[in-house]
Amino acid sequence: MADSVFAASGTVGTRLRTLALDLDTYAAQAEEFVGAMDREYYLHFAGHKAEFEIEEIYARHAGLFGRDVVDELRKRLAGAAPGDERRRARYLLELAVGGLLGNETKAEETELAEREAALEIEVGEKLMPYRQSAVEQANEPDAERRAEIERARLDALERELNPLHRQALERSHELARELGWPSYREMYSELKQIDLAALERQTSAFLRGTEGRYRGAVEPHLRAQVGVGFDELRRSDLPYFFRAQGFDDLFPSERIVEALEHTLGGLGIDLHAQENVRLDLEQRPRKSPRAFCAPVSVPGEVYLVIARHGGRDDYAALFHEAGHTEHYAHVEASLPFEFRHLGDNSVTEGFAFLFEHLTEDPVWLRTMLGAGDSNRRADYSGFVRASKFVFLRRYASKLSYELELHGGTRPLSEMPGLYAGLLSDAVGVEWPVATYLADVDAGYYAANYLRAWAFETHLRSVLVERFGPEWFRSAEAGALLRRLWREGQRLDADELLAEVTGAQLDFGVMENEV
Ligand SMILES: [Zn+2]
Image 1: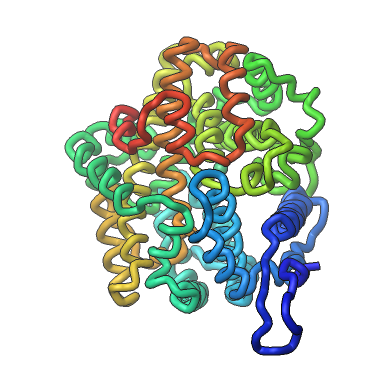
Image 2: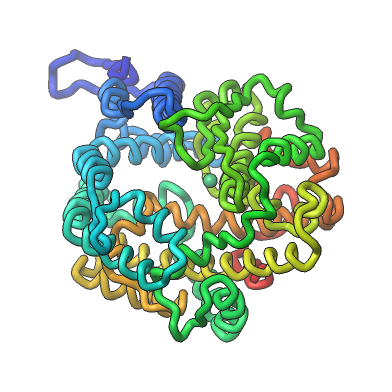
């Protein structure tokens, strides 16, 4: 039961009651909570059940996320010995704080989800579900219509959703202060032990260092996919650019599962012999159209939910999720829960990017799919590089923005202008203000992605150096990956990388990637 994480010593009911938190008990109950959430997520998004009943799960485990628990875990962290003891305390504290924030803003979040699901926009004479409209926009060949969809989307966002986004954000900021941190930013710097300011110095250097060649590198691909250059480009064209339907034929739907099996086979992993990996292949009416991974129990029960549509997006999504899946499925079972399931998500995202990147690699495309001729594969690689360039600059500027947004020194009223200005400069297109809140992931997840990109790039260069450009067909490369996967996320991306290569994680490595 949730409340039993605290064993009361002293007389219950007196004001002098002191509390002793048993970390092992807490971790065991936290694992139950996380498992229940992931199971619910799996059942709902794989289309097994219509409801998504997470409120109940929160209610059942509310004792995990009390302020007293957060205070106590902070004390434990402060007194913990460096190394694993400190890591365990910190990972549990991050979970407790995230859970507390989630629990205290769940009214806003639920309302947001429900309103968003019910929202319709009017485009021309036609009503369109708000959520569906993003997909329609990405697939719409007519630029005027794309702009029209975007205008309607932004209007609806501003009018119907932003007030709730604002409420949820202000509440989170308030909670960070109530918990005793000077700001949300300070709170997450401490919880994640990521020097966000140092990371921002690296990402800003990346923005400056690539400024001169950005447009020239991306422009030909923009023209090829969208038919315009930066001068005429609108923000509403970008989803269509990223979608790049023209390359879909390189990725046949009937081969998507086989391509994954063969890739893993090349690394010495027999996907179908992995009893802890549950492949969800069946089509269901309510199943998510995108692949996902649900690590219900690590490493014992990990779901890889597959959407068999084909096309470049589906391959990229499936391989990304397969990277998460294999990482979780190979974690050493005897590690404590904190190391199997919590920790620095830059690590699991890095392995996910590593697999995703294969689907962009001309060598992989040739050997695994044999698709197209070498010119088309090279075109495709060039396109992916260009779209990644846009993404990296977008995320680099998003980090600068989020540091201000959560820094607690500037008023919220300045944020829309700041957001649009930073994004416009970095991406090279006039960026709308309306998404200044919806475009923010909780808990500085943008920092995890930025670190994961750098981690993946370092790691991939080691794999290529040691095992050649066809490293994905090397059982030895597979053995190296399995060795890293065993650790779960006990070590953060910096430590893990130092272990493999002795190199220091630095976002500067991305300058050569683009
Ligand atoms: Zn991911």
